[in-house]
Image (cartoon, rainbow, N blue to C red):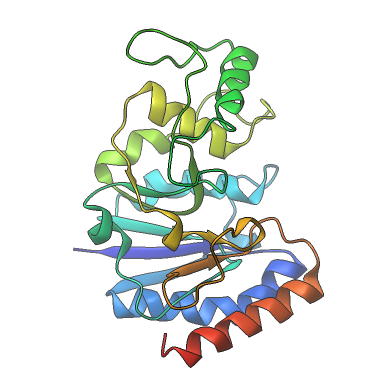
Length: 233
């Protein structure tokens, strides 16, 4: 069983944050017998797209690895975090920041707009109703295996659709009825949307997505690392 943990990092802010977070992500990989890879500027195969589009390298990596876990650079991982694919029993993603214990209404329009813009079939429920509430996944934390390879195949014409790769992947999951297990909020505790955090005793992964102030971000990451340390995590 070959495993890979990877993150994508280039640009000043990500590189400075990575100085704090990459050692934790590398330790996570080491604890679970995985290789660790940082996709930097020289590793890009989609240089004209958003950095997140480097996730579409996954099909190539699955030729070598059986299990792949992606962790954003702007997150910290507690040292008792389990291997995500074992936790989920299969392909997994963390729920989106708009999801709090139920199906997300707020992200449904993203998928409807995506389908309309790209001339694709509208996602529907089992009764054929459009615009139904959906479970929308956040791609800052996810894991895949070979059976998930098709989701990440580079789509024709996707790069200029303006909708973002996260919505595209969610569209593929929903319309293809692809089985994905939900890890839940403790594996994607987003700082800016915490309504029951910070809980440094239970959150496995603390994620700073959307935080743009570099000085604040660096101070907060250091603070949260210290707080996890106080609990031996």
